[in-house]
Length: 416
Image (cartoon, rainbow, N blue to C red):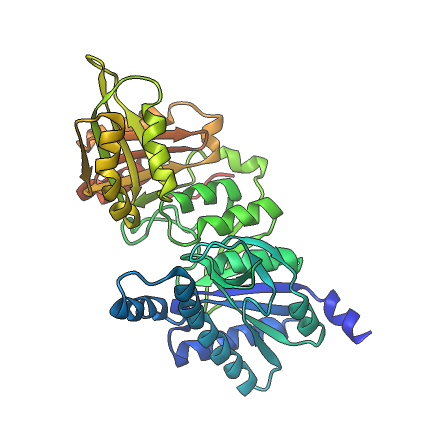
């Protein structure tokens, strides 16, 4: 009966980021928040990131002894950051007289593929987690890590703790997965750039996935993709107080009445241009095959109209892939017979997102007119059913975001 009683209680997964557990005082506040959730009649499973800048310090430590640290050993090293924070947080909860236990990713049976540094979760058994919940314990799980099918410790890449939390919420059939951080929710734009930016009460998975992919930092795109796939309701809110936050859930009919939901910008991209490539079939395939073989993720692509049998082809990649792409430049040039390959780091991508764009016209015209009025030149354009992205000069990114936010009146609450 005791075990059945605890299983029947609502279950909440709470995820706390590195800034929320950066020092002892913040950890004590997080412990109080967790206990309050438990006292409210919930079973509670917590996922934590490494404390503050621990991960960055560990990377620096590795680089101090070798310029090319092996991926396997980096996973062993980086996974220790979350182990430290989970143990200290568990101690803080126990100090307050509550029963809690910490588990590593492997102990929680978070199974991944065999890719080091960017592993993907393939299964979560969570047998031990369920056993500890049945004992009425608060369970603290180290985020960002798992164990591969060949029994190696793996990490999930930057922001992987969000993915851990969503995957656990699905495996445990949690009522909600709370992603708790130092911002009160998801805003219509970055409030540091647009003071009038408004916190949204709700947003659908598809819109949140586009915003996260286009540069919004509040959630990792993989976690949103996973939540959408399995129908896990997400709540983004403050880590140290119980605020309404932003609910991320399935699309509702009323959501389509909002033309544009939010604006994202990303200044961490670089544009490469392959000049005077032969304008014939197979050239693009040759270029992007080389990039794919080296694990370079290409974002936007544009090719101009061929003249005299030649064309220019431009594409953008994340700044983290600059070195890999630059190293391939000579190979690409020789492979396709191009004249040269150049790069431009002074770019930014600005994107507007909204499912209402499916059923409303004139959005693109308004975007281009607004930027033209600000004398902002557009270098590249990419569109989908619910998104328009433009590449512009990095120095004008903030101006573009503010102008578009005002043009679509995102500071006003939707009338739905």
